[in-house]
Length: 54
Image (tube, rainbow, N blue to C red; front, top):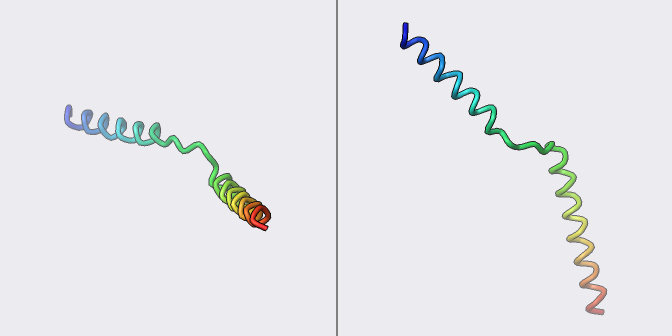
């Protein structure tokens, strides 16, 4: 009977730790928006470089 309790406690501990270690609070949609903004900034930087070289 002690083995069953130890096994149950171990499983609960593992599941609890797995749930607590998920620190990704960002929404995946935010990642897409950030990538788009970075691409726009890169494009703007390239255009500025082109303007300065002329």
